[in-house]
Image (cartoon, rainbow, N blue to C red; front, side, top):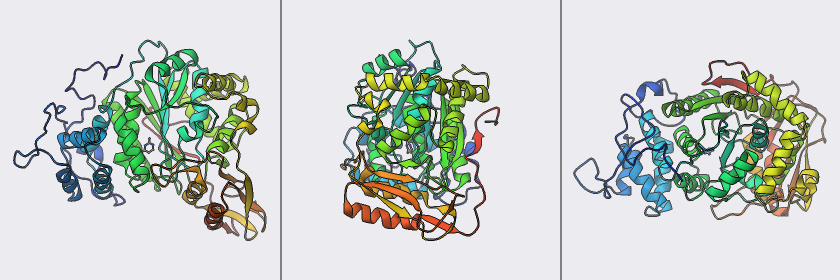
Length: 498
Ligand code: URA
């Protein structure tokens, strides 16, 4: 049923070349090109008790943590040992948290990143989708605020004849997660068995699930831990997290949406480009076509932030409406998916085709079918008020006349988490109904007292905290800000036109 590209145990799918060394702390200006730092990864550990490098003592989690804390390069054996043992429950969360924090502070070499991606990929199985003749293409975002593009892109690309086997995540830090959004649809199941996942793919061309015990289980555990230990913002951890689960899906090609700006994990465009290159290169090493779009996250994407609110906005786009920025990004990403999936000669043709599939209603019909096959209430398509709704709403208003000059996009994400739309602890459950509607975006003219945003809430205390944060999130100035491009650049493509 499963294979890791049909390779026998001991073969690593990802092989880097050359020697590697530590790149240095996060946030420190990097001048070195990581591609020149790559090294060969030793074969997979087969010994039940891996040995440490110093002396011939068995490896201990403590030594692996200390080595990374001291800024040394971990071997592939050490990384694989740590990931395997953590996945099996032999290493507790507190030691994994310490290791993650050491990685955040010390960084990783290109070689370590490839080894970590491998170890996480090999913690589970790789889906064999070879029985589907169509191209298998997926899209993944590095995480943003109000980013509901996956809900549009999976059915839209499937309507074009591509297979979209989407394995998504939950909210991470201040960013929303596709699984949490889907689960706001009453009855929708994201934990399908692999066999059922394949059946749904066969019947409608797209399926959206979370990591299972079989697929990249290491990422499932680490992702939840990073979410609550302030250990998300590392390009190496993000690369390994995304690429391990995407490579496990058995896709032929992958489109990455790498966010940059105040609401992204990579605040600076050069850091986003670094992460994009890291992931494109990792894909290249395993023979997958990967294209990354660096896109703006200096303000929420679209206007709705929060789980069921975002489903409503995705339905608007699939229905031919929705806010301009969200619609544009969906069409551009779909253009690339259709191009890499070989149903369009160029990304531009793919974009035009995607627009037609929205106009004809074919994309929305795919979404309806997918919801039905995954046990959800299809009634939400024609009647979004069937989605969970908060008991109260309240406006947050502009303090003065002027233009919206700056938005602290991360604070808007945090406000949504405070309302209950995300998690502070692993065990927290999310409230699907709460969130924020943003009425004014960067460059808009506003008058004093006009609503800038509306919160949807179920708890007065939480609403008070979120309001205080939102009041500080919008900067109103006399002059309008410089216009920001939504799509900054494309990495990994022969053509950079979008
Ligand atoms: N998305 C993921 O799947 N993993 C990360 O680490 C960040 C965004």
